[in-house]
Amino acid sequence: MGKHVITLMVNGESHRLEIEPRAHLADVLREELALTGTHIGCEHGVCGACTIRVDGAITRACLLLAVQAEGAVIETIEGLSDSGEISDLQDAFRQRNALQCGYCTPAMLITAQELLLHNPTPDRATIRDHISGNYCRCTGYQAIVDAVETVAQARQTAGERS
Amino acid sequence: MKAYAFDYVRATTLEDALALLERAGDGGKLIAGGQSLVPALNLRLLAPQLLIDIAHLAELRGISSDDTHIHLGAGTRHVELATSPLVGQTLPLLQMAIRHVAHAAIRNRGTLGGNLAHADPASELPACMIALEAVMLVLGPKGERQVPAGEFFKGLYETALEADEILVRISIPRSPAGTRCHFNELARRAGDYAMAGLAMVMQGQDSGDVQIRPVFFGIGDRPVLARHAALCLQQAENLIDGLEAAQQALALDLQPQDDLQADSDTRMQLAKVLLKRGLADLLAQGRG
Image (cartoon, rainbow over all chains, first blue to last red):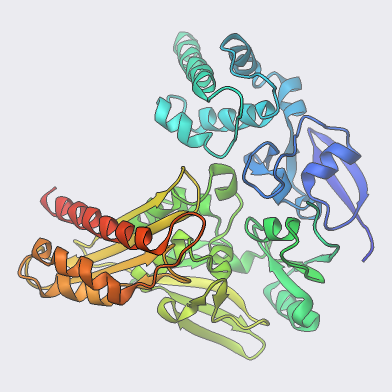
């Protein structure tokens, strides 16, 4: 069972890679492309640490084989950071102390951003429900919900002004 | 953990997928969303020789309807079911259930057909299919056949699908006006596997001529239509009068299993609680 040659579109750049079909996307992003902001926790879809965006929707990178992702638009935390799309979320996480060790943080940010794109005014229960697939073992979640709520309100206010 | 090595091929048409599956024999495995399969691969619970990717097949996509049925392509993703106005209008039970299927990131990729073919006993959608009397359209080398949902789920991760067959479409009869439905499950935390769950459909009035289909899941090795309990409710003068007898009758319908999450006595108790809460919800809908 040989390697496959595939082309992946990651953060706007095209990469030609030679990989084994069994390699999941989280490993390929980290090992082949040095995009180590995508973290690996459980490798079976429970912890959420490897969450990325595929064709605009959050996805577990450990539950997607890299060969399956050929032709898709892949965005990682590095891409979302560089574009500035989530800079307000990142600021709020820092200000609210919504991270300690940081292991869950990239995935938590991507997950929160998806919620706010679809539902700009979520209540706390909705925020908790949406991040329920992302484990954090440091914060107790309270501060994360605070940060997401703060950003939702700030974006609303900014939207009303403009 | 890392999966055992396997090969991978992307099917271009349904016909192509069938041919690949037949050629691969026992070593072949279909992959669509992969949200149950890839964890099993990563945990080395499965060791296929060849994965046949059917995620891109147009023949498996789409939600449509005619005068009598709603048709759901097997490749329809959970998120598409959750956001489809047609599904919301005609199959509200499905949208209630999908909120409980894992988490947003999983629902973005997982497919209806994959979920049903996987036949996890704790899964929500198989129970809904039985409650809604869905019919599965299955394609194999010998042609098409239709399997009623009640005959599709055979046991733990086991369905009526043969190794060389593909689940293509799920057709669900339109519900008559006034149909009520209820969905609930009890899990340790949001998105976890249910310790016990109930999908229930009711047609008719609170008293007199009523048809009720309570389907329990996460309790035995497959979803179960609680026929004895349903009969107790249907024969009572008022639905609510039949509750106690129906709860007792669950002992005839369900064979709860022990596992790490809950023992069999707990599961039976949870089933009774779910039935009581479900009935209260259906009655409240009738008053609303």
